[in-house]
Picture 1 (cartoon, rainbow, N blue to C red):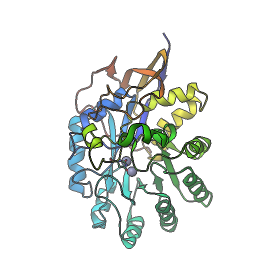
Picture 2 (picture 1 turned 120 degrees about the vertical axis):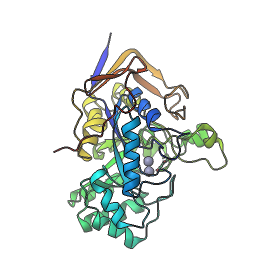
Picture 3 (picture 1 turned 60 degrees about the horizontal axis):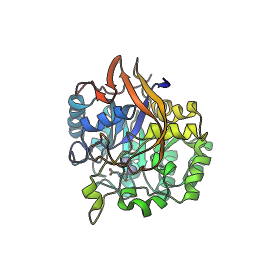
Picture 4 (picture 1 turned 45 degrees about the horizontal axis):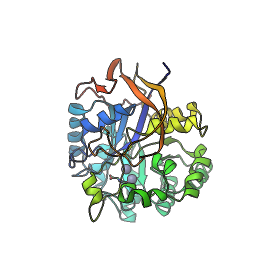
Length: 355
Ligand code: DOR
Ligand code: ZN
Ligand code: ZN
């Protein structure tokens, strides 16, 4: 029996949809999907309904995680561009501040330039300011981070050329980290012809040429995060399909196939999906935690359906994968064994701050 034992994945970018859109996903179904994918911790985004832009909303969401999560977690605070005080009050309780600088799913976006600068000036940390933004917004955010000495994280880098901009900023001494998604690494705009709205997300898939450049420049990337953004098949089939794709259950098997292909080595994979996320977001690895992956089946191709995420589908249909998650041990407990969840709702814990 051939098995691989790793510390697991920490997914620094997920949307578990609770509160507000639990028909797409909820904290329990989303963290079950996490365990099924070998993900032992998730960092959840604030574009809920209502959005997490006030301390009472962050506290209420934390309470829901305390009651329902089966994987460990951290929560991002958000801003709707109104109250600076509310954002500052959330800082000690959040893993970071997520700002939406360009259009995507949800209502959090388009801050007045003066308010955006004030946010960069006032955010007290200790978490980073993480941004959703297209190339122009990334440049603007880097300038603000530079001006105010703020630590910045660029979510789902939209274009491989942005990696060069980020790298140049680092050379100037700006503390800027970044993530890429599995879909930008493994799917290109060809998938839109094949899958239609199921392959639509923000930022959108890029050309085959740019996809190859993401791999060539992977050394400039701090971490891989899924941007797990479930929407139902009905919503995706509608007139105005919402952007976003799920990813929690598919990322490790997809990237293990990439290791098998010789595109990256296992140590670098673990840096990208585990040590990198913990380091960048200053989190402590949970004790006595291990994911066992069964390799006996060899390579296989992913299916469109049959997942634990409530939305039930994957855009990676037909893509090569390797390994089945056989067991997840989280803080001494076997929480997922042979496809069965053993953890009680609420057994997930907040990821502790490092240092
Ligand atoms: O495609 C996306 N979907 N990109 C985002 O930034 C948000 C996400 C969502 O929440 O659905
Ligand atoms: Zn985003
Ligand atoms: Zn997102």
